[in-house]
Length: 466
Image (cartoon, rainbow, N blue to C red; front, side):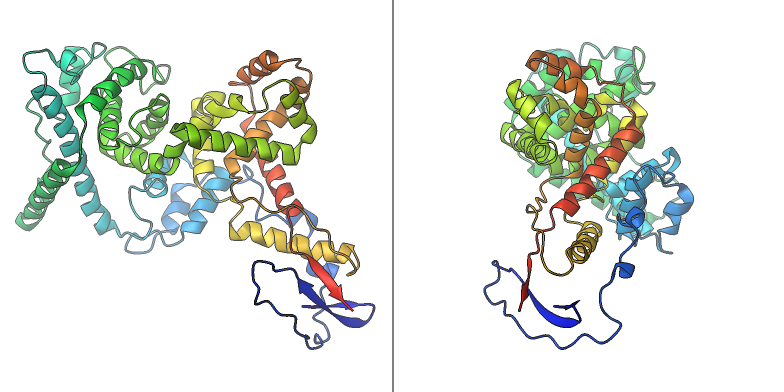
């Protein structure tokens, strides 16, 4: 690689210890007019991947539909994720967007293919649910439904009847789909899908002891899940039974993870947005596959360690103070990360933050971020007059955007934390954040420190060879 240096071409080499086959080669003179100059670089205020987060309107139905081709394929996944990250999603199109973002449908599936998948999802879920309910009943014959675990004390008889009317009937049969005005061939296809679902459910391993244990914990958590939200408010609310059914079904057929407290808070989001028991189950299951290690001690400890490393990298003073107060393990961030900051913001704002983080648009491994780092390399070279190269710390791609949100929240009360004298006061300060933060400000701060870290971590080391 050659740059102009005092009117002469100089050969540059880059340290590539990971590639022993790298060789230095003499580069031919750069054609006149192709030298890198300051004019070639973007303006400082435009140097980020795109406009700042929260500065664009939410993704609306018109924009969403423009991303679909005539067959219904969402052909530009990157554009969708970028739009979600930049402004969140308008409530009118949130359900459609989440169906793609959380794995209910592949991005490149056609509208026709999604109809088949929807039927498949319907039969599979209800067969799975019917299986654990049947096994609980058969293993405890002669007892009540509450004793069996099929129902719960907080679900009255009227509630059970309302839920069964659109989920399972009393005989544990799978509810029939509406086959009105469909062809005989289509009905036969649906019957085949139902048979496939029966085989699928019957082959899944199930541990009744683990299910009963999960049911006991779930029945403690469900009655207190988002009861202030309109969707779950009031006695006899049928959505509580749906929430319970999904959680037990997930726990029964995901033995490696099972059920852990906090899953109810995660699921409630999907149920509110999708308003469908079947769709909420599959999207929740898909999401849990990506974060299941967070519900295991080793996984969460690793994530807290990453927060610790990131804070140390970005704010040594605050990090040292937390260490001094014996809270350097960052355990006070546990709830933030586990629940996706759900209890730190009002429900609707927490939904927006959840989908922004789940868009995975702003990650350190993304092409947009690499472009910013390339710009910083060129800018740094010009600042040094082509003579020296500043070497920064390695880029840690394990630092996901949610970790930068954690640091941004700490930065928001930085002085308050520095005034704390011990760990107890630190925890009190952090606990007091709930509902008192400006989401737009937190997101802007998170993005600012994210981009700052990207520029700081430029590591390509150029040396001038005389």
